[in-house]
Length: 577
Image: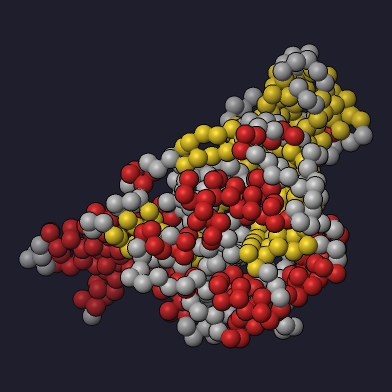
C-alpha cells in the first residue's frame, strides 16, 4: 500500500512539473498563438511646404515619459497619410511632428486610429510648440514659427490594439510541451531508481523531442508559396460552419501543417539548390524548365497545349461573340488579343519538347472566325518579326520585354487607325533608351529578378546577366496616372479617344505605350483570383464590366488574355446558380 501511495505521489509531482513547464512554454511562445494587430494612424495633411510627418505613440501617459514608438512618412508627402504601429499595445499619448521646408502654414484633419474606430475630433485638446493653432471647418490649422512643429494631443488615449487568438497553434504547443515534459520527468525519475540507465539516453531523448518541436515553433500564415508558385492549403476546422463533422479533418490538418511548418521555405530552397547543382544543363524544378547553357527559365504551363474540346470551343467563342455584340451595341470597338504564353512562343528556341505541339489558341481563332465571324488577334507572327532585332520575351520571366510590348503596340495602333484615324504611333525617339540586366514589366515600372527566377528559389547569379532594352517615355509628366491595385486611370491631354483595357499582366507593359496615344485609358487587371474591382464572382465575369462600359463609354475596348490562362472565357456569362 505504501509503495502504491509513493507511486501516486510521484505521478502527481510529474504532472505538476509538466503543467508548470507547459505554462512557461505557452507564455514564452505567445508571439506564435497570440497575434497583436498593428495600430494604423491616418490623417489628412494640408500644405505644399511639408517635408516630412512623423507620429509618436507613447507607452505611458506621464508627460515626462520618453518611452515612445515612432513612424514617419517616406518620399513624397501625400494628402492622406497612413502609418502603421506594431507597438505599443495600448498607447496612452500621441504627438505629431511636422518638418517644413519654409515657414508657411498648413493644416491637419481627420486624425483617426485603429482603422477609424478611434477618431480624435475634439480638436481643442491639441496644443503645439513651434506654431500657433487654430480650429476652422473641422481642421487644425497651424501657423509655424519654426520649421519643426510638434502637435500634441493632450487627452489620454483610450485605445487597445486588436488581437487574434490562434487556438490551434496554442493547443499544438501545449500538448507537445506537456508530453515532452512528462516524458522527460518520468525518464529522470526512472533514472534515479534504476542506476543502470545511461545519461546518453536522456540526452538523446531530449534532443529527439526538441527536433520534433522545432517544426511547430513558427507556423506560417502565408496564403501562397513563392518558392512553389502555388496556393497553400487552408485550415479546415473539425466542425463545419453548418455544424456537421468534417470527416476529412485528419487529412486536411495534415495538408495544412505540411504547408506551414517552420523552416519549410528554407528546406525547399535547399532541395532546389541541390537539384540545380547536380544537373549539368536541363533542370526541372517545380514544373519550371531551367537551361544553364542559354539562361532560360520557363514555366511549363500545361494548359497552353491542352486541346480544347468541342464544347469549350463553342462556349469560349460564343461568350466572346456576346461581349463583342454588347460593345458594338454601346458604340465601342472590341479588340481581342491572346498573346502566346512564353512556353508556347519559346518552345523551339529552348527545345522543351521533342516535337512542337500547337498552341491551343489557333483552333479557337479559327473556330470563332468561321462560326461567329469574330477576329481574335494571336500576334505570334508580329513577335517573330520583331525578334530579329531583339528579345521579345524575358529569359527569367514569362512576360514581354519592353521591345516586345512596343512591337505589339505598333501593330495594334496600325490596326486601330482604320477605325480611329486620329491615332498616331509614338516613335521610339520620344523614349529614353537604355539597357539593364533586370526584369521590368509591371505598371510600377520597378525592376525585379524575374518571376520564374524567384519561383525556382535558387541562387544562380548567371541568370541575371542578360541585358534587356528599356524605353522610358520622355514626357511621362504630361500623363496623369491615378488608381490603386487592379484599377488605374491614365489621362493624356495630347492623345485622342478613350480606351478601356481588361486583361491579365500581359497588358501592363503594352499599356505603358498605349497611354502615349490615347486621351484616356482605363485599365482593369483581372488575373486569377482578382475579383474586387469591379466586384464579381469570376475574374472575367462580364456583367460588371458591361456596366463600366455603359458609364465610361470608351471608343475602344481591348480584352487581353495569354494563351495559357484564357479558360476564364468559360465564366464570362455564368449561368444563374
